[in-house]
Amino acid sequence: MIPYGRQSISEQDIAAVVAVLRSDWITQGPAITAFEQGLAAYCGAPHAVAVANATAALHIACLALQVGPGDLVWTSPNTFLASANCALYCGAQVDFVDIDPVTYNLCPQALERKLEQAAQAGRLPKVVIPVHFAGQSCDMAAIAALAQRYGFRVIEDASHAVGADYRDGKVGNCAYSDLTVFSFHPVKILTTAEGGMVLTRQPALHQALQLLRSHGMTRDQALLQHPDEGAWYYEQVALGYNYRITDLQAALGLSQLSRLDEFVARRRALAARYDTLLAPLALRTPGQAASGRSAYHLYPIHVAPERRRAVFDALRAQGVGANVHYIPVYQQPYYQRLGFQSGLCPQAESYYAGAISLPLYYALSEAEQDQVVAAVRSALA
Ligand SMILES: *Cc1c(COP(=O)(O)O)cnc(C)c1O
Image (cartoon, rainbow, N blue to C red; front, side):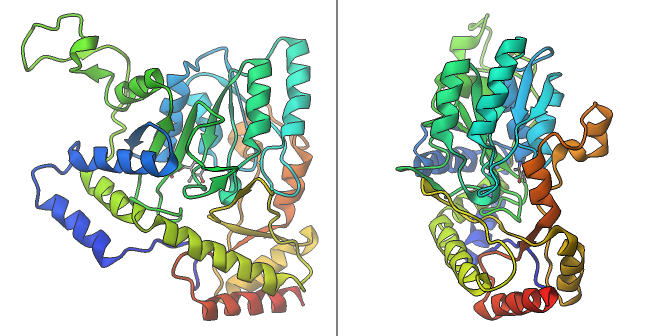
């Protein structure tokens, strides 16, 4: 089976992890800071906090913005569950903004219409979480302009988009947001097995994230009520968690970071090849906005909804590990029990009805890609 996504682990990656195993620190050591500083510098943001996974990153990002009971958080329905669940962890309510039918990203016009209605009803969101679906940045300039006008904060869920470009910068530079979150799950572009990171330009948010990652504890003299107690002394100043990443994982991440441009270049080349090879077939290839360049975590095609099930099953039967991204989050039974109903986001529902993600990963060969294309062609016939 050709999988839809797969990590690429080099001998250099393995050596980096082994070196940590032989060192004094296997967690909370120097590799974590090096990974944070390396990715922050790559993206062009001054601060970064690495954590156990992107779900934890989204949770502490919401908490750093003081999301709590009574607050509203809006996100895209075309995402993994964690983009919405993070708000529920904080006791806030979630709502969904429909997507753009070309990029499948949260639609700024739909957001504006929903904000106008929410302003009239006195129920504006505290935070909006745009998701850079498949590795393509949302229209962040438009979302940031709305954030200014309506007074909400912005967390970019860039789990798919490490290495992507938007306007004249890298996704993650937080030029149009308060915080950006990355995931390093093995199917994503760069991996630490499990892992995530939050980036920000704001020192106060950086400090809050560091506390939340590790029990709300600090030894920072500037934060202590009793700074003269002794060298053993620490204080808990907030309610935090154990969301730490290990040095083993951070060493893997840092080594992978040196290959990130190569990973993204290969994904872009394979995506361009899919665009060409699939163009004659009865399907829609993923649309790209002019304002950036996708890092291509996913390559989602769209087929006639009444054929999707048959095409998907035929691909699997031919050894192509296709997948589907995403079932609109609010159609999950848990969200239906919260009161959400089908029909809320028609664009997300019609996209989902025909969506199939084709295999795309660094080590996918052109021969394998040709096999995928042949399977799609025969599945559609
Ligand atoms: C993978 C993913 C997450 C969660 O990442 P983990 O690191 O597995 O917790 C969150 N949001 C999106 C959009 C994702 O694709």
